[in-house]
Image (cartoon, one colour):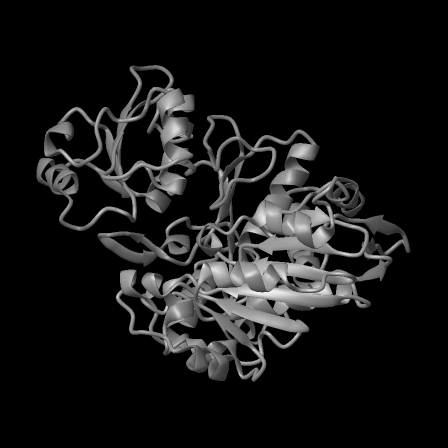
Length: 468
């Protein structure tokens, strides 16, 4: 274990700039739990970060930046993406010559003596990581982790310990910090790497598909001697960069796990002709399970043991999350906005419930999804639903300094003439409540909140549970 937080001397002092961020406040809590003296600042701190930091005694007395908080006795300063390059605390740390880490740099430093497994890809990262963690915990294995979402059964998104021999890291391809433009997953220096698939995203950072794909090529090339690269063998973009190029690296391609669907239940088919019921469904999740199985195999988990554990895997939180189930309808919400995820999720529900209509609603919320230059990537990605709705708030466009987006341009980009485009949340609620829901499922997809739409009430209405 690194000497960042030695156990045989005074606790190390660590300061986090932009501590209110989702992953940053979890890192602060993890370091506090490990024994470090942790301080942090931010100009805005919202729930749940505010309450969790307060409960641990880590909530700053006041919001805002103050260079005086950066003192020479700090052992490390960690800066989050929310901070700007001219942040006064960051400038002070640089002036004092303090060691300044980005989040991925710190995670690498804290896991120098561990086996590092990094899960990369445009989609499926969180689900694959969650499955691996579920299996390892099922068998009482010691492990550390860093994941970009709150997972069911784990109180923190980051765990750092002295004795865990391995760390499982969700490898985001976005930038590391305001002063480090390298993708996060380049800095972890994996021993076992996964590429779950490549689908152009983050157009504000990677303006072309080729530049975006190049980041994954670099990641693949960073696999060390005696390392392992696990990749989706059917993904066209991944095929361009994950081809075996080093005789010293083990390359493992995977596809969707063999399965069968009966009465809305998916079963994995094992090599011994056994059927394993699982709680997730859809081809994309079958691919995620295959990737997780290959990683677990590298970590010493045998096939039969993997299947025993994965039967109780509930899926990653906010990924195809079941909101309500009625006699003839189900309602799912998925943390999705990318075209590839849109196609996969809608297709999964149609395959799982072939006898039911599907109403699907997508909220365009990210910079890429609202960008006119990126919108053509959505062509025919929303063909599976029987009723397809796209919602966006024009004020979000203003906030992201994007040009106005005519609804007709959205319809043209999706290449679906009957696409319903709505820009008012009240109109969206009225439209959905007015739909006939007998033998019909509802899928809601967004990385936002549909501007406060009452999803529990809507789900109860769809599933026919209002009077129960």
